[in-house]
Image 1 (cartoon, rainbow, N blue to C red):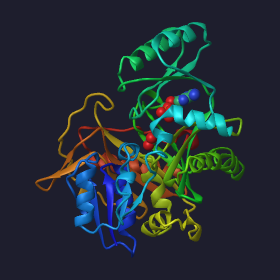
Image 2: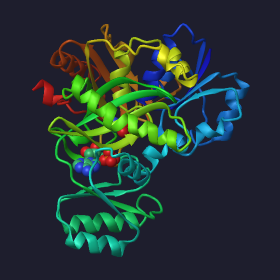
Image 3: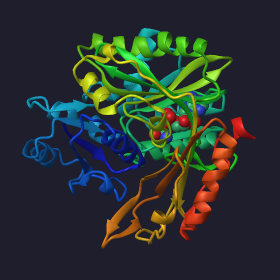
Image 4: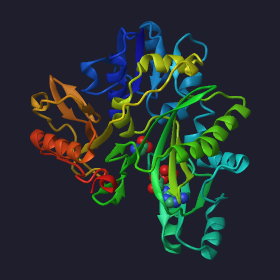
Length: 420
Ligand code: AMP
Ligand code: GLY
């Protein structure tokens, strides 16, 4: 089977790696891919928002299964764009993708289906927002409605923070804003919970705790994710049951009630408070770096799993996760998440001898004249599986030290809540 993957991050390299192991896979195209995917797939230089060229390429190259990695093409409706073809496409359609694309869409579902989440109010203009903030109790969370690439969420300690957030959002910092969301601040510990869905059934496919802040001890600016470990220390069968019954199942029912089927990964971002789950956000894709952390634990044939989801046959699959623990450290370009240099040579990757259960997944890299150059803020993902996260973390730190990439930095404390 000829498989296509859309995206160019660490998530997509990890998916490529697993797809390649399947006996069903005969060839992989990665659109557009990175230096890592070019070793196992043929990279195709088409932009992820150019649906027309992607469709033509898939048809001309007989791609039978297409996997969509990132959220933007999903929210923009790439799945619907393939409706009149025979190509099986793994990912939710445009309406279902509003679970990530519109926080207000999701909050309204939470309201209607009694899904536990932070209390919220919606405002349509700056004056209404100011009036509310003037009388409100802080801390509060102010959010832009649409996709904002991990930004657009302000934790506000006081009125002045709230006003700044409202002015920036209505000022268009995250695109044209018709609405703003003000939420109760939830105190607890975060956890990411993943399920895979076939339009009828869903199955658990891992949990993780991500470190989103750039600095050690979870300080500084928000990033796409500096590293994570899996499974989350918070997960228990009782908590899983609550998440499934109170959050996942009512959400999938809501999508069904809207006349849709949810196919794809559903990333459930949670705050756990006194052993109870509260929904913080949904993402309609796998997390990055959670995907790189979880997929090496997965024992299933991933091509078959994706295919069965597209065919509504997930029931036939038992999703099997290895008992080991996994940790991922992200090596970033100095300056990230602000300004950083690009096109910096990464030398010596091929000299790093990886042990069994160690992986390097590329993110912001590209291949030019046989050389690997940096091409983004998050550059490489170092992953290790073992029974002991502390030893794994030390080995990854040694591996990064051996690479000795002058333009890189990383957090040495990934997983500190379980390790230290
Ligand atoms: P989101 O993009 O909605 O996931 O928000 C980004 C981050 O902001 C989350 O991962 C949380 O750390 C934090 N956050 C969002 N909403 C809340 C909330 N209601 N209470 C506390 N923290 C929140
Ligand atoms: N690591 C967070 C995300 O993928 O949204």
